[in-house]
Length: 287
Length: 287
Image (tube, rainbow over all chains, first blue to last red; front, side, top):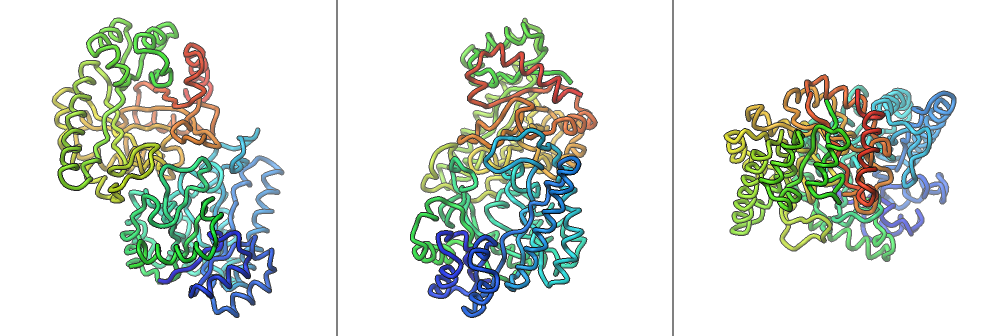
């Protein structure tokens, strides 16, 4: 395994700046975000990472597939639009040569991050999960034809209302297993899964289905905006070594992305963030 | 099933006031808290609920058993103190005739709610879980001898660092099953478990092990203090009917406690809170 920068960790940097930063800090891989790729342009982004000799450890992110759970025409339109957008994301991942497309599947239909509950939102979490399975049946073959692996990311249950009705690694595996290994895998992100009593059993079960291993710490207490509760490794409560060992024992030998959503990290000098990240990775995560 | 007031929902009320409130609003049961019982006195509290003809649907709470995971003498002392305190809680539950003693098992050793991580806290979540199992081996027979049922409460994973390394109903059942049904059961609290993809499977598996069914809603967005993210039924994202049906189908026919931690509810007139609670219970929860 080797260290990769998920570019959202240094979100002040444009894609060219992040590519340059990885090269200067001796990293071999980068995780890209679609927003950043779009700013720079897809073809130019692909050229930049290729010329810098970087692997693209993931493209973030597809998903948000659950709005189809809204009733009637609104739901049908939202579902079709989500599938269209995800096919574009697959195409982008293919052109970038990304090891996987990270899928954040979406929350309860109609519920939006940070906003009050709107009239007409859905409380049907089981139905939302069925929409995800339905969407996957359409997207997995499309991704397979383009050589892209969809990586289903279970998110911490705190994000179940607004971001992902996919909450555990076991649930992600249940969704992935009907498809070929090269079409659908799963993400192990320490922030999201560290608390799961079934974690080690499910990592072993995942085996070669692990498409991405992402690390960052879980802060305590959480900040007011829980989305920003992610911290540099060593700043929170997660014990990384048992998780790293389990992921390695399962057969994962890909890149390890550091993906941190944190107001202080975002405000810091990105070069210092990379230097700290390398140190902390060596001290807390690497085997 | 019938409605019960968990007295923390009306925490401005003393125990005598809450008992009186339940009687005036026609409730048949109340869930008590040790702090409130201590204010009024154990014998007087027991007499008051008995004379009012109320069932005590639960006593909250025992637990916080994980500090034994701290190293050396500090850990040994903390573990012994926790066991002592839990034996006192069992004795109180027996005198009150409580249907169960709710157990919030505790978080990572040394981590405290709302406080920054102290030096020397433990990241060993697996070890903390072992301490819980170890404590249970001592407490379950003690409870059994006094006719008290320990009710293991899985808490939402957001509370794993500081309040409960017990995060899922399945995990709670694994801990409970080695003991007789009358000694150790589990709590189904909608706030804590609604997101769990294995919820319905585990409720069915629990069967008569369900010692308490607690309801309140999960607010979105969460407030800055996530402990207070609980709301009146209908104010959040939880779909109660499938959960109520599953709990009933599992064989639970006890009281349904409404337990709400919420700054606005606590600031409101408790009589209005009870009136609203009865309406919302009828509209959203009752079958």
